Image (cartoon, rainbow, N blue to C red; front, top):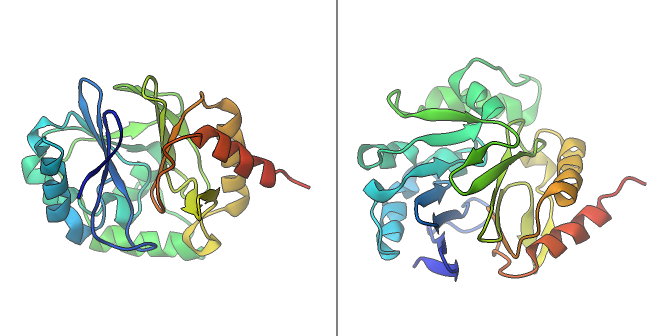
Length: 233
């Protein structure tokens, strides 16, 4: 069942256990924003979760995708017939998805993405829009945080004190950690992104990551603690 984490922010339960399943979130701020959409077979569950918050897909103003992985974009085709809203995704990941940029074939995740984009295709009529560092989208500011994916983006809500962190970090035992190497492009770049984002992001209480339990308070402090651990020797 959808869980209200803070006024206007819901965690949508998609029924797939970690680490395979990723969290999705719904944000009310005068408009309605869906952040990440789960795996290809969770689209129906996602629609029910949105209804449980008192909304319908037709009310959604925008979809923010933190990055191109199947557990974050997979539900889009099942939502598309009911969804009339633009979908925002980091510029490099959008080029990866469209085929205008090829990830390295000898890289484990790059090779997987080359195959995944052939098998899993988004509807051609979907309104996909690139996101760049510093873009303002609705009530959010975008931060380019590469490493897990080249086009990974974190979204911080300007007034709700919430950060939608995607796979920049995971939660384990109430603390933040970085994703594993086998699920990422460049661990050194990801650690750099964590440190840079911790230094530049405004203060936020609610940390909404894709894997693990969201932190409902002291989110920025938890990120600072991780960034300190990741400082180069």
